[in-house]
Length: 338
Length: 99
Image (cartoon, rainbow over all chains, first blue to last red; front, top):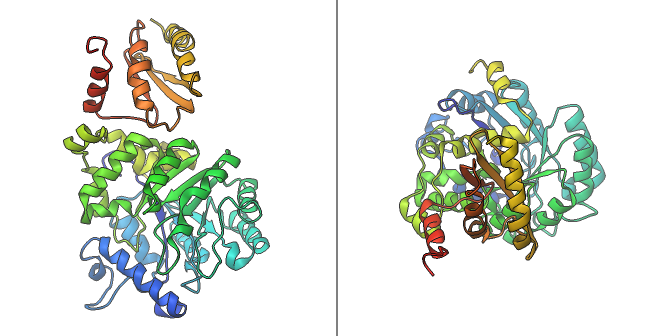
């Protein structure tokens, strides 16, 4: 917690980015891009702090649950986190963040980690994907599903595809899982950026009003589209997964983005996401966000409201708790942090 | 003034003075909450939801009217907030004393 504010991290990923995971030339380009992108916004010193050697990269590796758990739950004030599967089978043999490794983190820290499953019909087929969703929810207790629809070689699929996407959304709801999450924007390596536009979530959000849709990464560079969609659809939320790490590099851009989101979308729609461990220990980012202010010139010239303590409490935990039906007071007692 | 009395009065003003204006362009508003202290929390729906001009509607058309009701201490809206500087600019621009 920060003071009495509960920290519920929407997204952490166990991951395996070791060299033997990488698939071919595109995989190598994807791996290098992914590592470079993450290195650019990671707190300085985390490479050495978490086992890197001079000239080496602690993050181009297969992370253990012990090391990830230490970073997330011991070295930061994170109270609860959701471990999300990644299905990027274009670049990494196990998709980068396998279903199994997310479940391992959940098993290792059952009180502090929720398990988010994931499937991809482009690689696993629709029938197999539906079966795996059932297994992940019924046997491993998946409380959410994560989807990656932008791929290479014509394998991209759309989230408003009634034959591919909708059966998975219906399956999720049938399993009692209403939180559907989507990597949008921020393509990895040589993937087509336009395949990761958030626009295809509009029909999905309209057609599945009983589901809640989470767009990750603000779909950068499709920020305008993302704001428009989140502002209009009551069941679309935005995970600031990795976006707040820009406080280390370009704080002004975060002030502008957050001001815009507070003005046009609302703090009740925003979710903190650390992307730990790959983006490093969440603690420095949490401290910077807790101190964040919207400067006077942005308030005056753009009408952006000042960010309040209550806004930060919603973003850091209350919103995610509401989506997951988590009683925060009961959870505090369970974790003995009340 | 009791919360139920405030609710009735706010509902009457919304129905008689505000909703007809909002319906003109497909918009609408609902009362999300009235606090014991008289704070009215609204939620814009239909075409108003997510509209860029929602804040102008709020500060010029809605908030000013509702604040005239006895017992209403503040009127806020879910999902759309602007800075105090922008609020001041809007209310000044649309003030009847500033034609």
